[in-house]
Length: 194
Image (cartoon, rainbow, N blue to C red; front, side):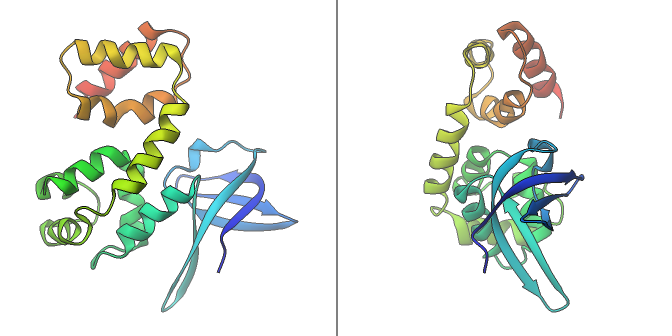
């Protein structure tokens, strides 16, 4: 029913944000609510999900993010909360690679995803996420600072795989640090966390 809301962020909670649109405050669940700032004027792409006893709004910072959410929802056994948890915990490239390679064990680490559901995700989405991932990655690449780019290259030179570096890139991009050295230190701390 809704395509997007354009308004001001008035509240940020761990799993949702409130956006004021023309004097009406909407509660919008988001995989990354802390990516927004109080008082920020923004556009949030909306998906309304109607269940037996609930009508909820889910918001994303891009049409591609919304599309990925809808793809995850199309999988039997994945509800909105599980889809949001997957999107919050993982970058799109690593998620798509895991699905393409049939890494069921990798997918079971997400909340609410057991072995059967993980297998269903692979079966339903294998080969169907490429467009979303490429567009989301282009958005991330456009936001990378020269210092962060240097740090990512350094992490690869230290022997970490592209998949490992891709996994932490969005988290590093959110840090807004001053130098490549600071990004490298933060990146190493994220990579060493299991």
